[in-house]
Length: 386
View (cartoon, rainbow, N blue to C red):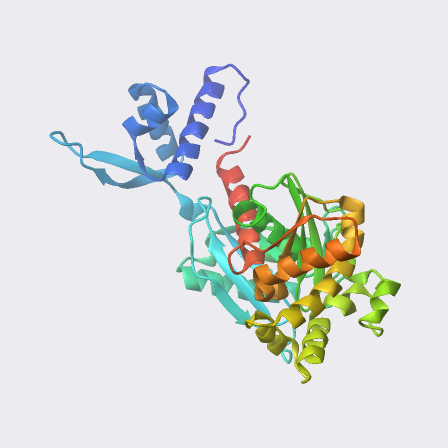
C-alpha cells in the first residue's frame, strides 16, 4: 500500500481498488466480500482479490460471520484499527484530558490527569502521562500509538515550531516543543491552539455545522477567538490569529470597568466574577459566578456580562463581519441561549452590526473533540495514502 505505481497501470488500478475498499470498511464497518463488490461496483472475483491483498498486507482482519440463509455463512472483514491508533490530548493549567482515537473515530474513555503544582513538569512528561492514562483507560498498549494531537492554551507556529502567548505550560519549551516531543516519544505530534480545536468541533458537530463561516469566541478564565472560513481555520502568519485577549480595552468600556486594561481583564474569568458580584452584591469567584450565570432569573447578570462581550466582539466584527458568532468556553456554556440573546441585543444597541449569535452546540470537552476529529483525519490518511 506504500508503493506508487504509474497512473493507468494494473498496479495503480489495484491500489485504487484497495483504497476504495478500505474507505468503505472505515465508513461502513465490517463487510463481506460480496458487499464490498456491490458497494464498489466491482465484480466478485475482483472483490475477492482485493480482500486477499488487504489480508496479506495486514490491513484487514476477519471480523465474524453473517448468515447467508441456506448456504454457508459469509465471512465479514474489517480494518485493523488497532495497528493505527492516536491519542487526543487537551492540556490546560490544572489537568490533562486524553483519549485514544482510531481511524473510525470510535468512542473510548476519557482519562483525566491532575497537574500537581508541586510536581516538576515538562512537555514530554506531561504528554507521556496523558498517553499512559488514555491507553490504560482504553485497554491498549502505548506502543500502538503512532500519532498525537495536543490542544494547548497557546498560539502555535508550526513553521517555526514555536509556542507564543501562553503562561499555562509550565516546564514546556517555547521553542522546538514539537521537535522535542517527537524525538522523545518517537511518534508524530501536532500542537494546535485549543480554541481552534474547539472551532473544529463546532464545525463538525456543533453550532457551526451548516454555516459558511463563523467566529468562535471562547469565554473562560482566558479569552480566545477562532475564525472559521468555510471550514478552514485562519491561523495567521505565525499562528497568532485570534489572540484578542491582549488587545487594549476600548475607552468606552471604562464606564463599566475602569480597571480593565485589556480585553482579557474585561471579559475573562475574573471579569465575569466581578460582574456577577456587582449585580448580586456579594463577592464571588469565577466558579460561583458561573453557577449564578446559569441560574434562572439572572437577567441583570446576563445584561452586564453581555455589554462586556459586545465590547470584545466589536473589533472582531469590524474586521471580519462574520454572519455567525458562537459563544463557547465555560462562560458561554453557563450563559447558554439567554447570554447569546443578551449579547445580540447589546451589539444591536451599540453598533450597526447584527450577526447571529449562538451559544456553543459542541458536546462537552470541545477541545478534545476537535483534537479527535483532526486525529481521525490523520489516521485515515495513514491507512489511505494519496
